[in-house]
Length: 329
Image 1 (cartoon, rainbow, N blue to C red):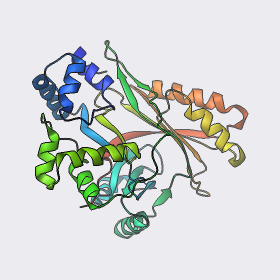
Image 2: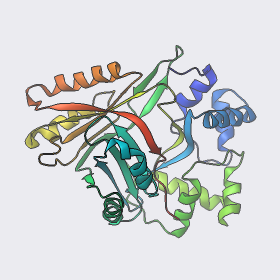
Image 3: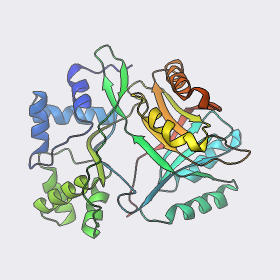
Image 4: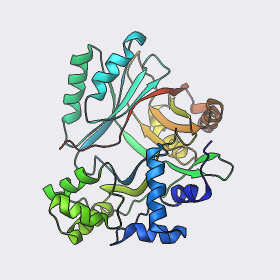
């Protein structure tokens, strides 16, 4: 449960997206919340310093940039977890890394800027660790979206977020776009005119920076702009990766139904591994404790009905790394 005040909650609830690409964007946000800009900056800095927000700025889509994303797993001897985690985390393309309660106990996301890069990173991790990396690329994406709603009583819910499907045609990014991505992937500057600061850093006109950011948002290169909450810090301690064995000829139909559940934040089809991993449908569920998350998983099981052929919920027992997509400069 979170212990934030009304203003802090409203800031997070209202601005997990929708940050305006205007000349004085923070002034617009402050006005919509009924506070002054100085107070807004103090609040954002406090939320970031205290870990309630991971960052404030654009959330980039590596695949739209021309790259690729995959989920991978390792089976690591318990006494070597820290050592192997350090090896894995050294790779800048590893965005998230979680320890989970399973024989495959280390799960990490590789987010690479260029096609073919993931295969190379996996080979390097296998060489460094002496372990087989199980690669689980997305075969079908049904839903991706984790918005939080913070209640007055301190409870936190996951809520469905609007899915944008009306993006413009894919945009061809040039080196200036990539410079902007590198400069903003950790968040926007907390300044009245962040574009002036970026203009000086990148030697680009302010208007051009705004136009390029707008173009990237319109094309889906930027998923959304705003607060990126740390759901663990806000009280969602139980991060459950529910996995299900579904007949291949039913997987698309059932995947769409599972993805439509308002508590599911990610839903994908991924490959199986014979004698190691029998599950092909992945759906993330969250709760302030494991019991709440398991209740949500039980609803998925009931929805699957007679098509349920087995399932598990893998809870994260430690966050080994969490940064989001990072462009390697």
